[in-house]
Image (cartoon, rainbow, N blue to C red; front, side, top):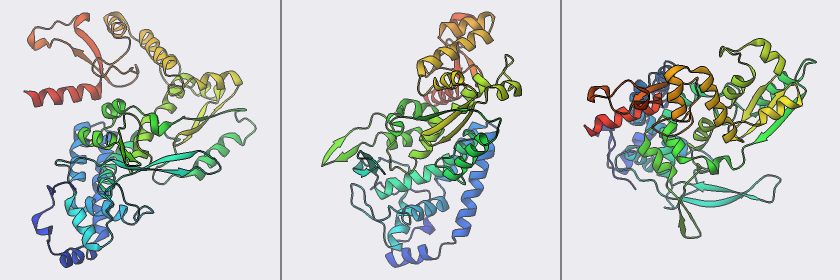
Length: 394
């Protein structure tokens, strides 16, 4: 168990078990939910306005909120897995244990425990699905950070993504597909897809570079490892199936498919959505977690849509690079070519339409020149992380 370094007020820390139990049973849950919801709304608004410093500050307030800690403990002690322990075999069954857990949640010195690996049967299949069971403490920590990440993921999510999202379900996806396919003028071709091993193969480096949350905590969630038959195994890729925050991470990794298809089939040369192209190609995406369908007017269009960045990453990496070459001119085109369309900081491919900055390898304040060899394109968020890291070093 982690040391108690919570920001919860001392007046709220009661040592006696009976007092802890009384404190838990007297909680005003409506007030707790209202306080957490207020912060989540502010995070969502700041995300819409792309005020990332404000998002980070509000996320810190939420993950250190007394009311948020109460809610996540209630969540992990009332769901279906409440009687399933992790590797430490600890459960929170009594009101005193629950209250003590809420007061103990802290990011200071936090180290995630390995997950307990079990295998569950897939419906209608002989193969079994691996499931990682975190400890109660780690579940609560994941749920706490999920509260602060969920508003960001909802704002940035694909419009027609329905899996593991608030207020959306499988029936919503079916209804949208019916509306898209039931008319006489509807598309005639449907491409059905499934991201093979989605949860198991998501890059940790990509998640750490792109998911807007505390990086040290995220690394603990991702690198915790798992125990199977008494042996500890490392986790180098993927998000554990069974983790509270895993569905949000997976959804955020897959978000962007809709934009890629729209840029290819709905957008004109000026980079704007053109209804003539949209109506002619009839390309639409509906995704539920790692399962999706893409509609198309013809078989040829459906096959072209199949070459998406998740199934054919090399194809679309080259395509993004070519788009940048066409859109840029002069020395900016040469800068783009010099780095093969990849961010100078993280090395990941860049989309010419996304927010980006020009980075000077030798700062102008130190004599750097405004010339091509000294210039590089970087992701906006990568530049923010670089500046933040440099400020801490100084």
